[in-house]
Length: 286
Image 1 (cartoon, rainbow, N blue to C red):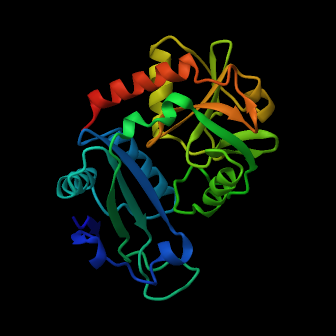
Image 2 (tube, rainbow, N blue to C red):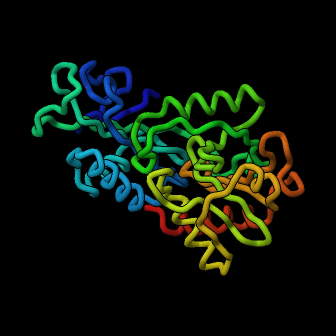
């Protein structure tokens, strides 16, 4: 079956979809994106992703071209046309096509470009890695200073992930001034003496939608939380470690730079948080 995608209000076969070579998303990485997970045909944390989309667009002074209900209708239409049960919906909004290349922003009435597509991921919530955990390596964080804006500037995270793969690991934790910022596409956590530690929100990290939900569920479960920076050395001495993201949910980390974390097996807190997140998110899914 040919996948149906969305481009600027049209639903098209993917091999017939196109965007101008002058689109600023292509020329300047001048755009933002969101990825919404789908379980059993329903969208997880949709409102949170739409709120962050609006925040990212506002930070770049791009006018949001659609209302939230229009995004929701488009997401649901794509799920239906592509028969997605478990998977992802990718959404990208750029500053649009000014008709030529220029560093200056185009006229304010230039229509933004909106693209959406689905990715089928059967058994997304049952990833085998959740039972064995990820191996992590540390890589210097060389990204720009506004990581809180979910832009399409993903080259360096891609390079860091490839370095991790070349070193026999599943992902990288990025470090700056001696402290962990986040993973290549996820937020990072450690657990020590029952306390969950994760970096506080700022321009330095993405304000993860899954992060917010997991911390809320952890607080409701009477788990202790500290929002502060931590080092790789501290992480290696932790009892547990894990990451959160829209597609990995809560993923245990069992090794950092070749050293086992805790027992070297997945931990009880990460396991429980994954269970709670999936259970509660499924209930609230749209």
